[in-house]
Image (tube, rainbow, N blue to C red; front, side, top):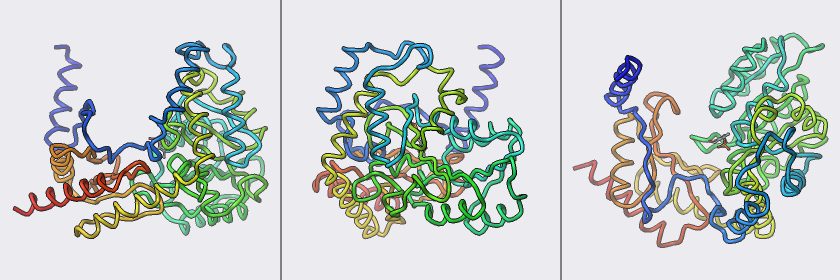
Length: 387
Ligand SMILES: Cc1ncc(COP(=O)(O)O)c(C=O)c1O
């Protein structure tokens, strides 16, 4: 064993002792999924699977190069047009992941001397994006409330050449609650900022048609008094893989010319592109899937509440069940799995110390029997703990 391996093993043992070590597991076939982000069950929809196969047959197993070198397929163009239409924006640009899309937008827009205001609860990819912006010389500040955001904006000098960026998740990925997008738009307009919204968990789940946070709040991103950049992922409700940015044509052009994860990484896989396009078309044709997801979320969250568990019903399909210490969350997750429910524990550093949890997700495809059986298993795990 090399000295590096010895050091790493030592660190891993420390993580294990603190109940914070993570393990990769193969998902058993027969478990009930209460953890994935395939909210609408579209990843296995026959049209989605067929579109992935067809794109791979036609264009190959990979994108072969970055888009600037290798070009792209008509499916990429069609997906971008459909995404822009869905989000009611001028243009869209797809990326190989939502992570890459987030890094791209923040680092391509923030320059030395700019002020970047990042919500404390933002997804790790936005936090990393802000750290990279900081390395470029931007000033990064974190806010946990609208009051704090306003005071940071008031304290910053009025922009002349420099920019102010407000960066926020729409749906907080570990809590499931929704950021006050209209208030962020008002503050953005008042202080001449740019609003960057990561709608990863809102896309496909919020708004009557599932088109996301803007529809949910009935606000228009295009033509608003504040420039709004909407980011999303193809990897959650759209059942595929990849990320996207929706905004103005100029913004997308700017990203093509300056976003390093776009320029220096292979383009979105054709199969993922085909799958996402098919999924988006199914979703737009069958908006009742979104309504079904809402019903299932409500049933699951209310059922857990009735069991006396600290589960929270949010507008999104994410139902956090707070358990406190990491060891407890791990125990619950293992006991659920033994009984056939897949829901890994979420522990620090993903959530704060003492706030370990099960991040339960509802899915439109859950049957009444699935929900009944899941609730009965949660009751068993709760009772086992009391013994
Ligand atoms: C809020 C949020 N933003 C971005 C991402 C990254 O998306 P992707 O998995 O497509 O890289 C995730 C996924 O984990 C997320 O939860």
